[in-house]
Length: 263
Image (cartoon, rainbow, N blue to C red; front, side, top):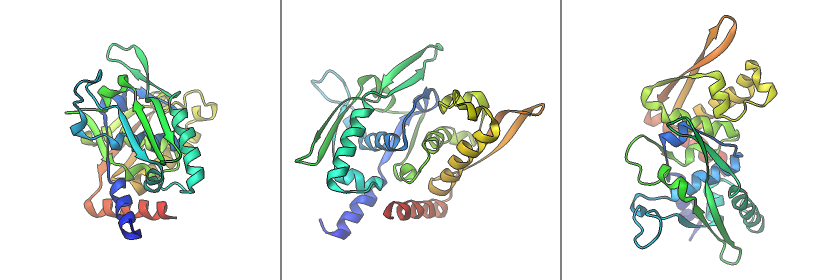
């Protein structure tokens, strides 16, 4: 593959679609680094609608996916030193097996689910293979309605772990054009409720909200603004306005992403 064909392949890879059920996005809590979230999104982008049926297997879904590690690195804008990226990807995938997501069920109870439950890496072939946890499958496969879908490139240049999480939340409510969160509820969804400094709204706004919203507005296909709702002098709720960008605005955001990932 020559340089031009390789660049085209990378750009196409960044346009792969990430799809998750709204229920998973809106009713879950998890702690993942930016690299881990990026890897999860890349894995989700490998899922295709035609893989719903897998006759003769225990699961009705295709749960195992193989990918080229170097291609994954280039699509995601990761420094592609062959030896280092292999070891980093191996370590990252191994770590994902231990990471769980807490999901609040309709009856109010909470359950934990793993993102992936097995991985393989082969340094000689440069390939990695993962197996999505079967309990996660209903939230990622055969999504007919009430799901969020976006191009992978929307999240690739983000540097804050909260940017990716908030972007998916806002995308899941984009059809409503606005969403109001109780501030304590939002802290819990972002898993920062036990970080002492973030109980202070000024710090929460400065180090979580503002950084995330700036990245979302600069890099993605939506624009977000918010206003504070107070009880007395205390901020108790946040009302977010969510707007889908115009085609020209989306093109500019895409150019920004590709420019950042190229550096």
